[in-house]
Amino acid sequence: MRTVVSYVQRGERMTTGQQRAWDQYWPTLGQEVASLPDGPLDTDAWFGRSAPVLLEIGSGMGETTSRLAAAAPEVNYLAVEVYKPGLAQLLLRAEKLGLTNLRLLRGDAVELMRSHVAPDSLAGIRIFFPDPWPKKRHHKRRLVQPDFVALAASRLAPGATLHLATDWEHYAGQMLAVCDAEPLLRNRHADEPGRWAPRPEWRPVTKFENRAEEEGRVSHDLVFERV
Image: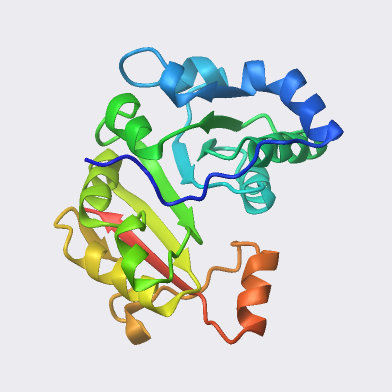
């Protein structure tokens, strides 16, 4: 299985505040995927408690992630991202909100799930607005492909959900088709118009989603349940 390539490598220059947050909090709240010991990640030890584990793939600058973690203190919230300044900004947001239920991982989400997440273990996976790679010749770089969805589904506990969102119509259609074809998943909202999930009130509206709306793009949510 290929590694995650659904992101653009960017520079890693950080602001003074981001660097301070990184230096202060990363040693306890963050880990590099490539440096994890063999076997499943010991989330109970890392969080200091046993609780349902929710994985968010692609936390960006942490605007949504921090608010969702704050809204669900009963969940052990894992965020995996490749962009170091984005993780540092998320650490700043976590500091401001006083979050204790958030941990960060830097690196390849595929490698994380394949090597460090036990099958049937996650309470949920969220992938909000992944890079759409809008040019047709780049569609093969999109994250939501059959092999990836099969892996993600296998890591969900029965009844847990894979929640996707995108503001690119073609990518939304691809996500729907790929998830429909995965035998471990069923669409919780198959009876809704277009088979899309209603937009949940709890998912924050980001500046990128506002920009998409201004540009005439409609956001779609998909929620599939592990059977």
